[in-house]
Amino acid sequence: MKNIIIGTAGHIDHGKTTLIKALTGTNTDRLDEEKKRGITIDLGFTHFQLPSGKKAGIIDVPGHEKFIKNMLAGIGGIDIVLFVIAADEGFMPQTQEHLDILSILQVKKGIIVLTKIDMVDKEWLELVKEDIREKTKDTFLQNASFASVSAKTKEGISELTTLVDEMTEETETKNTKMPFRIPIDRVFSITGFGTVITGTQIEGELNIGDNVLVLPTGIETKIRNIQVHGETVKTSYAGQRVAINLANVKKEDIDRGNVLAPYNSMYPSMMLDVKISLLKSSERILENRTRLRLYHGTSEILCRIVLLDKEELRPGESGYAQLRLEEEMVAKRGDYFVLRFYSPLETIGGGTILDPNPVKHKRFKKDTIEELRIKEEGSSEEVVEKIIKRFSEKLETIEFYGTQTGLGEKMIKELIKPLIEEKIIVIFLDNILVHYSFIEEIEVKMLDILKNYHKNNPLKTGINKEELRSRLLPNARLKLFSEFVDYYCKKGIIKQVNNNIALSSFEVILTETQKSISEELDKIFFDSGFQPPSIEELVKNKKNQKEYRQVILMLTENGTLVKIAEDYYMHYENFNKSIELLKEYINKNNDILLSQFRDLLDTSRKYALPLLEFFDQNKITKRIEEKRILY
Ligand SMILES: Nc1nc2c(ncn2[C@@H]2O[C@H](COP(=O)(O)OP(=O)(O)OP(=O)(O)O)[C@@H](O)[C@H]2O)c(=O)[nH]1
Ligand SMILES: [Mg+2]
Image 1 (tube, rainbow, N blue to C red):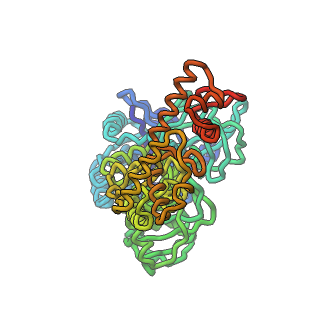
Image 2 (cartoon, rainbow, N blue to C red):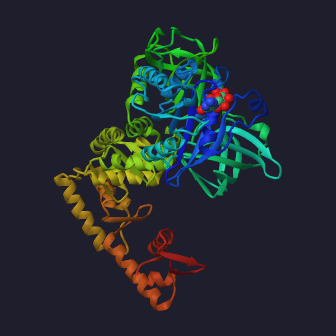
């Protein structure tokens, strides 16, 4: 089911709170002072039972210019605005300011509600409507429906209800795959329950029992209970108004402006990279390092703006900037925010967060501006690709990228699927992500190492895998490196021979002399059975000792000879035979003594003992006191 939040907006005394009462039956002004003065000071909350059966959360905001700060804390997560204008007064200053704020925060849907129609005649009403059409031109409300109502006579109220109901059908379903996020708008304590916060769950899914953080303070807490529309639920979803009972945290330790979120979804920051636009209607020129008020989620934070690509910003202009904050906050890429002057208090513009955890930038740097441009224009998929490219050499995990982008693991897994299919991203060990450009970089280095190695070691089958790892990807564990090797083997670039890596095209090529030495040795070792000659003895009287030794090494690498111990090599056929005989014997007799093994091979202790020890080491046999059994 869709979850919808409806907010009010409009000038003071234009009938917002009265309208909500007429629609829902609830007076959302709850403070004594509000009741006494007849104005709204802080946000009011209730829910709306729609005829279709849907329930929408309602946020009523104050219209007084002094309380814009509170209005800003409530308006961020809304889907539909009831843009209230009193028919008798028409468009007023905060009507305009609220419209600006809603536009900056990218609210997309609204109904223009003309209230107090019992106080004006039809002709006047038409004039007011005309004026409103003019003033909402080129805004998200330019084609909005009008609803004309009187809370006093109830005229138009049921028509408005139907209009709202229809509009909820058109709102977009929210993303529940993101890590959940709740900008906190109220904190109180209830005797017997403890601390309760309320807020609009703008993203994700939350469950009772979840361990979560209050940010930016990092206080650890647990979800004890969740209420949506006054009822306890196990799970709450993006787009719902929620009241949450938190365990082990004092009311005093949480403020409006804090955010409830899971571990590793956002990191506190003292800087933000942003794209900002100044309102056309603003009459000021924004200079570098001006002190401003930043409104994001439910928070208000003082900051200075560093203009990165312009000397100054004029009304209607936009540019890249870095906000240097006076307090820590948490945000995600793509979040919207509003900026107001520090003094006099005046909304001047706002924009989008491009990087919530940037490094400090200098002004007018081409690279910085280019990177911000990609962050601004790129889809999530493109940004994920860029970030994976940047961190490829660190061999980072899906979890890391979930945090780095603020998208969470689940979203990263979704976003990389097409990238992996298109072979732009390669995944290793089901978790480590690298960009294809990194794969190519490594390939070039590897080819270089292997070419050199083959040149210097023409009789060796290839470079030892561990040696290659330490030269190529020293921070990769062996398991990960093995997957890299498999990848390049499949790609047909390299091959693995036993534990050595070679270029796929590489073959050991022997000279005529080497060939005849190889054949000679093959025969000598085969014929000598279980009493092979010592290499030292063998080469002692040879002219070309060095070549003999090289060929022996090569025969060992390619598996013709098996090195049992120092200066003790056996032909692989004899070696295999010895294992066969051993197994046959133990299967019959349960175990074997050294002397029995010696007799079995018809050899001497000198040859039998190292061979048995070699079997022990290679887990073919197991020694129990004087006897050996099969491992
Ligand atoms: N005659 C008449 N009076 C109305 C109507 N709607 C509201 N009022 C009156 O207008 C006054 C202000 O109404 P509110 O609902 O408090 O206005 P508001 O927009 O919530 O004001 P703030 O929250 O302070 O910005 C109250 O005295 C209401 O009784 C209406 O349709 N007809
Ligand atoms: Mg009110």
